[in-house]
Image (tube, rainbow, N blue to C red; front, side, top):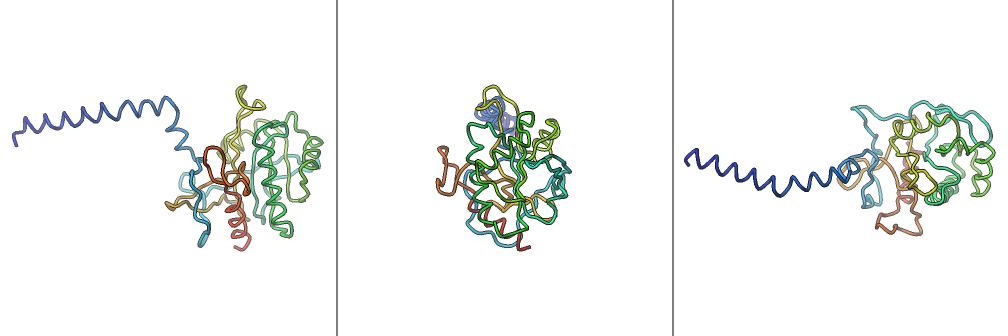
Amino acid sequence: MNKKYTYVWISLVVLVFGIIFIPKIIDRVKGGSIVQNDRMNAVPNSTPSAETKGTLAYIMFDGEKRKVPSFEFIDQDSTLISDRDFLGKVYVVEFFFTRCPSICPLMTKNLVALQNEFADDEDFGIASFSITPEFDTPSILREYAQKYGIEDTDWHLMTGNREQIYELANIGFNIYAAESDEAPGGFEHSGLFALVDKEGYMRSRADSYGNPIVYYRGAISEAKGENEQGEKEQISILKRDIKNLLEE
C-alpha cells in the first residue's frame, strides 16, 4: 500500500479514538472517579466467594507486606494501649466517632456481633480509633461502650492526639477520614474494617480476580444482606477470615 495512504489511515484511527474516548476520560478525571476507583481502599461491589482456600493474602505496599504502624493511645479505661498490645492477636480495626449520626452505630453493632462470635477466643481483639478525640474522652468512650454492650477486654476504644489519629487512618491504614461540613456529624469516614494478623500484618481474602479485597464493608449487617446501592454485606466473610487467621 502506498505510504501516503497508510499515514492517512493511521491519522483517521487516531482522530476517531480522540473523538470517542478522550472526552469520557476527561469527564472521569473531573468527576474524580478515576482517583476513587484506583484508591487502595476500594472494595469490589460483588461479594468474594463464600469460602477462602489456603492462606489469606497479604496487603502489599511498595513491594512489601503492609504492617500496622506503631501507635500509642489511651482507651476507654484510661489505659495506654499500643500496637504491641495486639501482637499475638487477630484483630479488626475501625475509625469512628461517638456522635456519628449515620454509619458508626451500624459499624459498632457489627463489631459487637464479632465480639460475641469470638467471645471465648483470647487471641481476638478490636481496635477502634476515634476521629473526634477532642470530644471522645475516655469517660465518653466508656459510656459508648456500655451503651452498645462492648465487654471484651481486648476491644479498645482509643483517643489521643488528633493529628496522629488522622495520620494513622489516612496514611497508616489508608482508610479515609476527614472533617467535612457537608457530611453527617461533620466528619467523613469510609465505614471499612481492616483485618490484622497475629504478627501485625494487614490481611484479606481475594476477590474473584485473585486480588486482595483489602478492606471489609463494616456498615452492612448480615441480616440486611445489602445496602441501598446494592453492595453486599461482608461481615459473614470477615468472620470466616478471622477464624482462618486464628488457626494459622
